[in-house]
Image (cartoon, rainbow, N blue to C red; front, side):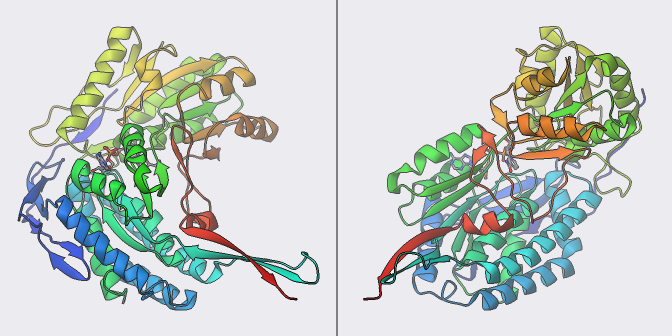
Length: 493
Ligand code: NAD
């Protein structure tokens, strides 16, 4: 197998300097500290972002609290909020190239993918604008002649949003438009690796007419700024997206004032392939699910649960398709797979690959980093001969590593598919609709794809079963998550 790796040329970009956004103003960190981000693909500095402090988090929370309490946003009609969200969508589209470039330079993902994500994010703003107008409560007219019941929804208040590095702009935009649609105010703490596109969104929202203090961004270390938001008594809800371990700590840190916590966490997602599937389409889907975002994706299909009778032939087809991928410089329009986000993640993926080899799994392809003068890239890797106890079958590797686990019959497929502590997503490939639906019912996962993978859109809610999280984002559920429910009895006597 030949992997098409395109070598890396340093881009002619100057590191762009950003400031944080608090109470409608662009500010430096209280102690002036700055974090330099180098492109993981090109190894040159690309952004300079303030390294915020706990005091900066406090200032942002105070601004969001004041903006919420005086009703400058929550007091507007849904229609008025929708107008701002629609304007934001328009501006995101106008600035698509700028946002996509920053995203690719900080994450190392292909520029074509970044463009798709930014365009998708604009679409989410448009959808959420509709939700701002559709949000409503309920009434009970069946309580007897002398009583009327009302159920009203109110914005929950100040929401702290903590985001990861893998889809910095898109994940942000799966949360923020819904939070704003509900009438809440926001403090975002993006990943310290990829903060710039969040700051660009602050600029977009200000230009769209969002009042000062409603949307604030504090950049900086998770253990300082993120932790402070979780512990803060003036934060009413945390929306955390990241690893299961940090999510668990964030849940515990949030307990002081009993704030609501939404958690979107890790996955170890199965691709269940039956022998009667369209095997070519299934192999395309399995390869896409493996290498999308270089495997650094919460919904990556990192376990191939395949019917034993076709396991070897199907694996050969997957390996052959991997050989045709274009991997390398993410600024090259032809690139399909880009870089690994940083040294720590690169080392961790290689260590887990080595563990798989030591445990006795059989390497069908990959298993190494690419030799390159710049950046960090890992070869798409496929393991056969694994058993359920191995870490390559259980741990979220967050890299382009696929572990094959053969099954015998539908019940066995469901058992193996569910055999991890995670429950985020899963794909099913078969031409038998009955079998597909029975498998769908059996999967303990928040998202299921039948004869497709990693399909999305703002209409359907997303979230995890088991240790993949709590709560739901997007869809009508996505806006309701950010509301409190109030029940009122009205005596008519
Ligand atoms: P991470 O858990 O290391 O960090 C996530 C965020 O938490 C970052 O902003 C980080 O700075 C912050 N943080 C770190 N320590 C903190 C602390 N003590 N208190 C509060 N915040 C803290 O995750 P990551 O490496 O950025 O992202 C990868 C992980 O995210 C993977 O596990 C992936 O599955 C998960 N993820 C899940 C979804 C989903 O929708 N379920 C989406 C994308 C990523």
